[in-house]
Length: 208
Image 1: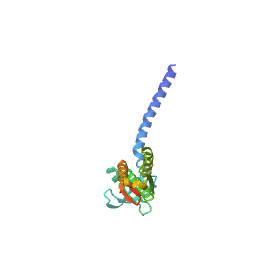
Image 2: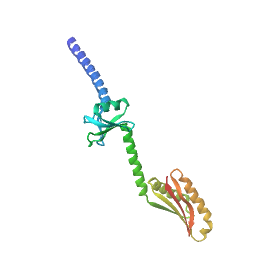
Image 3: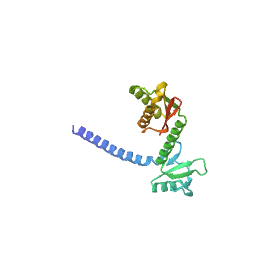
Image 4: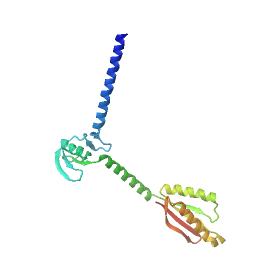
């Protein structure tokens, strides 16, 4: 039993020692992995750069010239930035010292903004038709539809139709359209305010 206990204790000690070593190796790996990467975009970064010499552009956009890759990496480390191979087909490859994470974020932001612009160009004009006597329940339903259209980037035109003696109550129509414009101030701006054309009164809202 004593021998078995000794073996068991020894095994536990070895397991503990292995865990400690593994833990140190794990953190060492985390520190080093940043300097041995190839980005998802195909750009070689830090230790992933294979060329022995590179043409270096520093963090201030200055042309440093052709230097050893290890020296270029050391310069990047000194300023806490990354060495990124921006022109791999050049001879030697062109590398830039930059904040690669920040650059990726800016690229994604540009893509999102371009996507928003393309959506705006593809925006359609949606029309919501009203009557001066439209009740509150129906009006709320129509306003919810209008909000959905605006959130998708579409323009929304509210058109109020007048018939017969309703033309005597145009002021009521202007009041309703003003209230509608105020209810969408968080989402849209007025392209043109309520205006009369024949028997129709229109208000145009566009997304902010």
